[in-house]
Image (cartoon, rainbow, N blue to C red; front, side, top):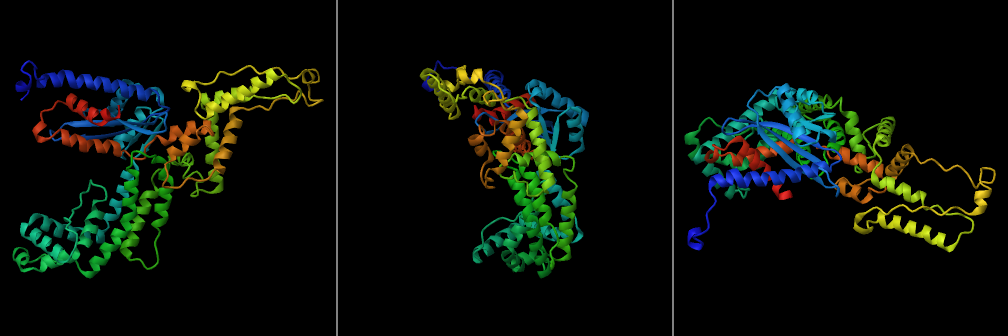
Amino acid sequence: MVNAMEPRYPVPTRQHLTKVCVPRLYAQTKAHVKASLGKAERVALTCDGWTSRTTEAYVTITAHFINEEWELVTYVLQTRDMPESHTGHNLAEHLRKALAEWEITEKDPVIVTDNASNMTIAAEEAAFTLHVKCYAHTLNLAAQRALKITAVARLLGRVRRIVNFFRRSTTANHMLKKKQRLLHLPEHKLMTDVVTRWNSAHDMLERFLEQQPAICAALLSSEVRKTEKDLCTLTESDMTTAEEVVSALKPMKEATQYMSKEKTPTLSVIAPLQDTLINGLKPIEGESAVIKEMKAAMSGDLQKRYIDLRATLHACSAMDPRFKSLPFLTENQRQEVYDGLIAEAQDQPMPSELSLWSVVEEGTGKCNGSADDEGMASEEETVDDGVRFKEGESSQGQHPPPRNPKPSCPLAALLGGERYGGGAQPKTNTQENQAKEQMTRYKEADILEVKADPLVWWKEDQYEYPLLSHLAKRYLCIPGTSVSSERVFSTAGDIVTAQRSALLPDHVDQIIFLNKNLKRM
């Protein structure tokens, strides 16, 4: 076709695309990602490993930060093959090389991984200042502990056997669809649980309960009875237990789904969510023994998590205007969190915006005595420049140059001193005092609705709390889960297919990198 349109045009060969086009585009995109990372206040990483269809081991690293527009940005940095054993030492070396390659060693990087021991060792050896364990994995571990209870495991086994029968038998599957239409039920397929798939046991039971009338009718039909005589539906007692199990697992699923978001801060949600889940898992009078045992298992597993990370989680929640009141803590604990943030804010480098405002405020003092018209006009112009900058109207986004204030009136100069009140010592506006004052105003501000976006709030009010907004960027950029790395596996599975199993690891890395990051350029 191309030859018919233009015989002189040489169609690019596979080698040209592989060795020239893709690497060139990868280099351009990588330079853009590096430039974006260089502007970040802080960079948080997620890391996880997976095995491809060709039995090659890969390690994926993603980066997260808040940009100048207060948007939560996510980049997939690399998906490199790692043929050596995934020990903590080897993973630490892999992470150190990644930090150096992407030039984020000085960005006070944080890492988020699953709960595996090798990841914990790797984070320690790579000298990360903070290591957060994935909350979605934590919820899944708590749910799995509840599902191992004997009565629940037996119920899941019965349901799994029925589901697998319908998925295996074409006759039974056809009869199920027929009964669904007859009973006006949704024509949904039955689902089975997978240990490594989050909430799959909940989904299997929920779908089974939805299709129970059709399942029972199909199993009682003569066509199905010919092929499977011993298979029976659940008893009434089993159905009641299944409904209770679904009800008990539902909060865990909803929490996992929310924590899997990438466009909104999630680390700040862990502390209030953890408190809510543990309180919701308290036994209720009238519940069955199975549900009480499930709740006790999940509650016990959740309570032993994040003990060493509570201070960080509480500080992060305090920097989220949705949870800044910290209602899950006592008054003394709340004050301790606020004091810690004040101390951290006063030790941070002064943001450029705050430095400018200090200069502007110092240059706008007015004398109570007489002053010439020129001096008054100069002072008013100085104030106007500060207002325009605050409202984002300064030319080309440049800070207005501070102007030298006019000397005070002669009488104030002659009679200065505390005796006459004209030369009183100016009040020291240290960074510590500014941090305390900003924290006081921040606590008094209205609490943001839970469904609102905290980054939008900070974008609008960042100049009201310049020191605290600096901390907010450092805390709210940290994801509460390693779901970003997990999602890369799905993309990689679509790339390394049976028809493309000969792809080299370097090409896999480049293609995944471009697939995830090119659209953000």
